[in-house]
Image 1: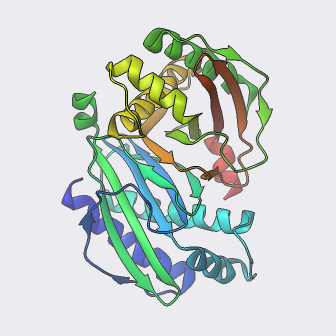
Image 2: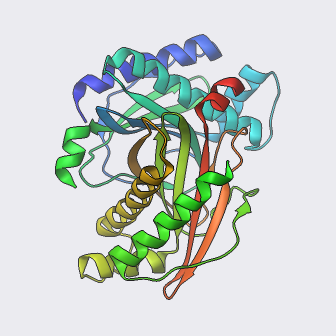
Length: 159
Length: 159
């Protein structure tokens, strides 16, 4: 993962949470991810394709997912129902979309979100991708953005 | 999910397992997926973008993942190690790549695989996507391909 992918993701995440949810994120130090176990219970995964390929994962706790749904839809879900899943997918989509506009890579495309749930789910990547974790905290709990993007040329060379 | 996406996926999966693994798949009846709980322990997820958007999931048991790795890499892993993860990712990638060539949709792109593990992991999609499951059996166990693709125009209209 190249360092220049990180800042657009930080700005995108901070801006989406502020604008859509009125929620101020505090960023902590990015790190290289070595364990495949997710930190939090819900992940929104968005695939990227084009000159940069891979995915971005928005990994949040049940509490953050529920509070985000409460704020966005004015309802208070008590479990990870379809509205919570749609909210996490939409947040992941907006973060990826905002990062995509800033990255300034021609012909970059993003897929629909896939939402992964489960107390001990793990998300892993091909071994040539070294994902970076960008941790944030907010009043509702913790938010982790994972960047698993590489240049398409590198992906082709490795296969 | 349109019916015309299903046949290319069936042919792609059967052909990849036969060619790469010497493993003959028997197909069973496709069905509309209503539960989000995965059938099997390991999933390879590939994002699609372009005129068709969403993802294809190759969901297999630990046994199938390990036997596929044994066949492809001539080794016998005892757990879901990095080689098994890479094998599942590569199989998902080949199935999606083969389906992409058959679909004949201009400018269709696929992302890198994301591999999800966990005994009770769930993979969900935005509520406007109605995924189809295509179940197969083989000598090693069960293989499930999930198709969660929609036309990009439909995705834009729903958001």
